[in-house]
Image (cartoon, rainbow, N blue to C red):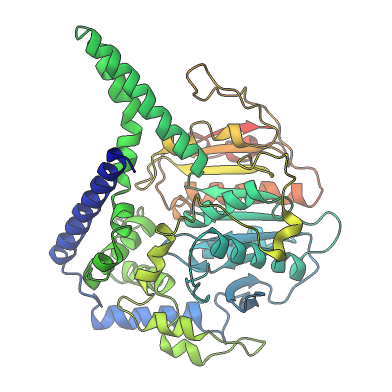
Length: 492
């Protein structure tokens, strides 16, 4: 390997250690102990865990706990509307990200408008999260095959008719997974709505382009130092990538050697989770909600991330199934959830490693002549531009080149040439929806983020059921108070 390779590895290690040191210092400065909870906060946590995870009760009125058993024996937990309802024509499957569980989609599962449709709504716990079993490894073969088989089983369980349709709504790591399913399978899902996540070929391409453009501008400047504008151009080209690297400090930390990670104080992970809950889940609400109400909301966020407590392991759902031993084991860690295991999502090449489809998914394999990176179904990318983890320009610039039936055109420098925006309004259209004031957990931000996701699904469902939609998605998102907060591009 080249010297530059080892230099990059060394810088990544150093950056990860710096990020770890900063997080650890902040955790102690914020007095975040491994449990981190007062007696009252712990009582609220236990109440929330019972509400969210008890298999004998409705998680939310009208919602029910269920399990899937995959061909490998892996048990996947999910929550669905209307209990054992089957024979529907529209299925929405929600996939969460880090550090969340099915509960992040509570607002949509209990939506009166969505539940008034004939769609079945299902929120999965990803393997290793919530109430689902652990995986031996969290690479593409393991995670993507598990989620793909779970989706195939849900289709068989709930959908009927020749016009049946399945849409996948996914956030963060769930979005990475859904993008890969959309690109590397045919017919497994019919649409992906990806929220605040990038597509890895787009992000790597934009990063490479930023480096090349910056290098070219800088080289030109060194030949004529009087042309200061070239130096500024070099910085403008590299700035999005530099910002992304800063935002990704925690990723470098999660990729430190295991020997280092195993020595991370539990206070550090507790601090990071608390930050996600306060500044992510309740980014808008924390300032306006104080006292008991805020503590109840934070308890729900903690319970969602931690998963079931020991008290829920004695409960059973309608088929007499309960949580498996690996879920029990996670509950005994500090903080609960076995976070050294959970961060393996970042360590084992899930986002970009080669995926070998399992035998159970071979029917969804694309034809050999199909481009393996182009999406095989329509995609709606929803992105809050105040994201603290992903730089919007790195994540979105050029993603339309990967939409179905898009024209792949490159500029002379190898950059992206934007397609002419279509006004298509049908089920085959793809979209980029930018939310001006929302952050990484945009789906939780009311009224804009959550409103956009709900209206997107309400617009989509009539399309799935074969009825005529009332206008385009642009009409649905820009006809009321959302208009000033949203921009949308449609590609058909």
